[in-house]
Image (cartoon, rainbow, N blue to C red; front, side, top):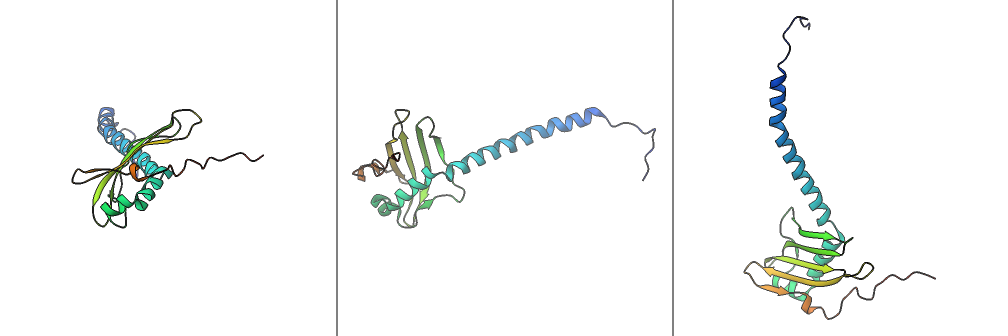
Length: 152
């Protein structure tokens, strides 16, 4: 295959127009991918796993949702902030069981830099609008006395 050396050069303006048309598509895909990656990081965190486990073992959770409690959606979306460094956790996500569906909300704060997290809210809002306080059934903070102590 040979090319003529005296051929016309491509129009630079048409390449620039194509680039300007595809840039928004690229940026949209990049943004959606970033959101998906950050949400995946939230959904696989120990906080989400621990709250989901606690919901599975909760009497209220079992009574209202039934057995096999898990994320409501195939690709769960974790709403809210999960900032352990600054002591703020405020998340909610959809859950379902064999009897029903709902939205679980968990909020915990750490008031001092080296302090423990204190659970402020742990609730389950059912599809029919009822809001059940799961924190009320907990008589003692399960993790209150599990501070690691340095060996001497």
